[in-house]
Length: 385
Image (cartoon, rainbow, N blue to C red; front, top):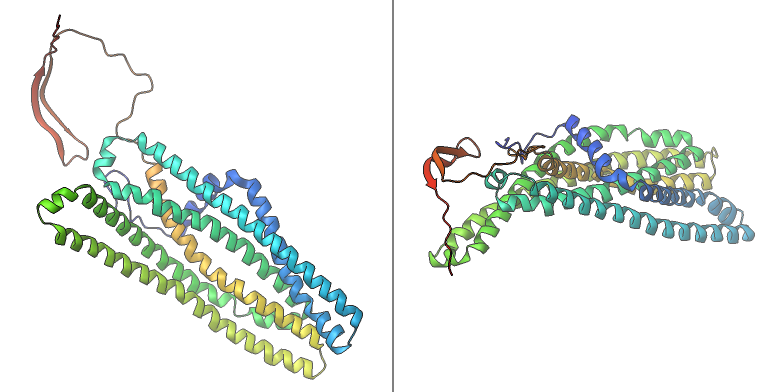
């Protein structure tokens, strides 16, 4: 549904437009903070590396400590585990801090840019759009953009790197088992992608209804004296309840779509883990591999399972953020219908009356603000002594 002034709450957001919006969001809102992102990526690499190192340490723990009962190795492995967790804790704090800084800067910059753009718009924009709709873009939409930037980028970076490092440990220990475990991964891509498409539509509808609710509440609060005077409490409540119920329905639908991603990953993951346990256990029994290598592999697989589940949610978060970014960018990009000329000509001062003869004017070519107005304005100066 396209608005007459070039702004739409429900423009279709397909895969191609999503990529365009994502590149623009990164270029205009994220790239200015490249230095902070570099530090965050370094911290993410450390977190992912320590995760993989923890899984790898299971090999000497089982083979050297429990099987060979090497007491010296016990202290070496114990110290390595302690250092690993200390490094991981510090790196986790650093990545969260840097990404939080970038996310909140995106909010501040976008809100400042959005307000500056609104100040330069013509009055027709504010007549065509209710105040609550515009305010929802400052609060709800910009916040969804921040959530997508800080959480999605953090999730993609940290979880994807963790999975890559852990998969490396899996192939180092047992390449055949790793191949078996990863067969199910590509199968989950198609349903996750389709869920993301549904999230786009539901999010756009939710944002539209949020704007309508904000407008209704604002009008009711500002006109509370009129509401009381004409006993319109029940009418206003019914109107607000309608939007509340609509938002609830859309939010619950989005929650169901997001929740569906986890069972899909769990189902395919359960098949992969079962195959690995049966096949890997058989190889240990036959003496084809050591218990330490097998437990190191299983540890890496189990540790990779959680970040893989988290990656299933990232697509939904990104789609929600892109739907909000579309609404914000539509407003930022709007060209005012009435603009000041670059080189305005001075208006000459002339004495005498000013006459308007049959003047008509409208903002949207439908609703007339002036219709055939004729009058004459005469300046008069009164002096008092």
